[in-house]
Image (cartoon, rainbow over all chains, first blue to last red; front, side, top):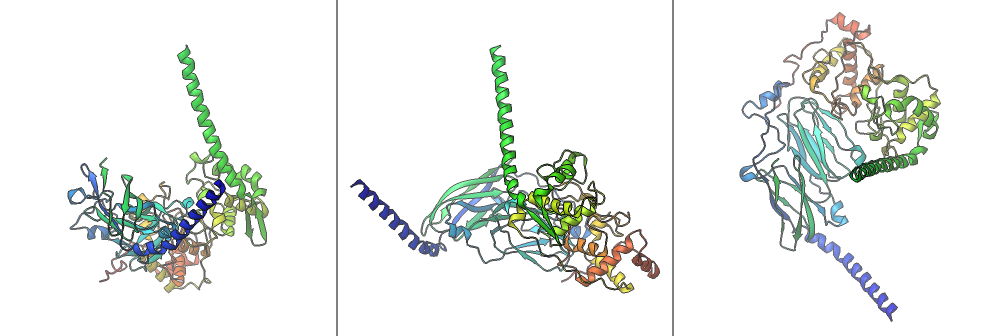
Length: 248
Length: 291
């Protein structure tokens, strides 16, 4: 009798798994509707961002005649909103959701001897472009950890150089990028699995295409590191998570 | 007294824990590495075996490159430039594109040639077989040589005939792509960005001075020079130029760079004849703003 009920329970469990598998394409369709929104703020006084001395390169100096350049490690907007924070789902995505790659091609521009944007987020294997708007030679030198799957490279981009189109094959938060010719030029590539977002000048963000479910969202800022929050996304009801980093 | 004993035992325990911890870490790393000891290298007709190089690595290389191949040998602290960390699989001297593994022959050539202006001597006194075995041993330190294939070598067209036009074009290329930002307007290694250059480990590094008469780190022939700037020197600030300098222009640049060196050469003689002088980038040479 006992054995019989055990077998029955097993069959039930298998059925449940089978039904779950059949249903999973449905949840992918619902993905387009779900999202996670929120704001990232800095608690405390914004640290002083040093001005940049570009006198090594007169071209760069000229571009900033009317707008002095500053470091961009911590960019705080009105109301304490923290810009350039990357938000991504660190737990809760199905394998299929985590491995799907968006078709948009994010662009990393070298403009006025600065990186625009300062932080570029992307999915594993998502194509991205490195372009230059400047009339001075740059070298673009990402420095991932070669033992973690992404390999460093170093390419030149003189004025008018064609775009470099490439991708990263492993998750890595975050890959520093630098220009050796202009040592103040420093930014990040943030490579994550699944949907992501980067905060705007108000510190707000929206992660699109999140199917209903329970997730852990991670917020990464280059100076303050990572924070996580649990978020639930229901059908027709976006999830929400606000983060506050403490000023050092 | 009892207190003293308990303190002492606490310290002893701490020491034991630390010792055990580091021991087990070293063993794990060693175990992974030992699995790669069947690594081979193929250079022409030669096949190198990592296992066969255990002794010669210990004898000739370990002092600087370290037992784990991480560049932390006991001599490393006294050496600048620092010994290569083989575990990363990143090499300056490659015939392959930037961000890819070198060919076995690239590592073989580096071992034989040595690296000028560094503590790495030429190991040509070892037999070809010993050097091939060492190539396999160097590779076994990095898991990348198991999971990745070497990159595609860049193509080098046959060296064209030197002409005055080519020499002049070479100078234009030097100014257009702004080699002088680091190497200086006349190639003396004193460009505006020279003083702040750092390698991938953030250690200061200097750009090559074409006037000091030292050999290039990655070979002395015209082809070597072509290869150096087209592939770039990975791990250093020197980027790859193969996307932005056409093969024909690359040869012109080789000729011009040769004319900067102090050694007697056909390029130097021709530059003297036509009165070509290395100089600061003129306004005309600077790129015109594109609207």
